[in-house]
Length: 339
Image (cartoon, rainbow, N blue to C red; front, side, top):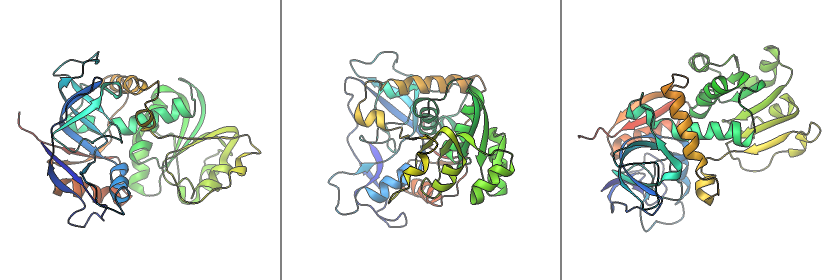
């Protein structure tokens, strides 16, 4: 089958940064689905892995990227339940296995779910990674409860994860949501997503306080954990919680949180699949809830750029867009396959 990947880390403009390969079509393990891929989305994780994972030596086999997909089940592992041949599914996959930038993919059924019926393939492909990240961060890491009240500050509100977290917080809790944005187009975007207030991350403390909030109960950082550390420590309420997804080099002064007894938590949506945690099926359950919210009109996809074709040119274009760091919403690639 055709797949797009790489064997050595290069800048995206390098001729070998992404290449087309013919690789064996996957066979299902006992818990696997074999999915014929119809569309994927491209995330910062794709560019990060491409840039970092093969810097010092050539890989013997190509690394196939792609951590969002929608497609149709063509084969089932012997232990799979709850799915049938022909089901349309969506998922974010497993960073330790070949990704979705291919004609077919093997994925553990416990991290997949039936796709929302109301969406196109491209729209559905934008949801799994960002929805799992936002949902896990809110309810599994930061331990918010459904219908909870309080204040939530989302740093990086116009990105893929931030856009979904705003919507989830408004749909499932009674939180007052403050999202950051600094450009007119991102300011308008986070308001469209449902943010109650918009703050400017370039002067975060003053901006939030000018809105009338001395402190906030929860902060989620999807942009720059280290760069906003002092501001977060200042703004977080006593006994509040800070969550983040962006790792950083060097250290931060963790003791800034000590006096307020603040909790700091990481979220990585690949943790469950990477370590085979006992609650692996939680991701299938979350995605099923996401599909219900979408089909009920309570959550909308954040597709903002749709490209076409499983090929090097298209995927390079998507990587270039991601690497600008200024994209709003999500980028999808519709494979546009006949039949």
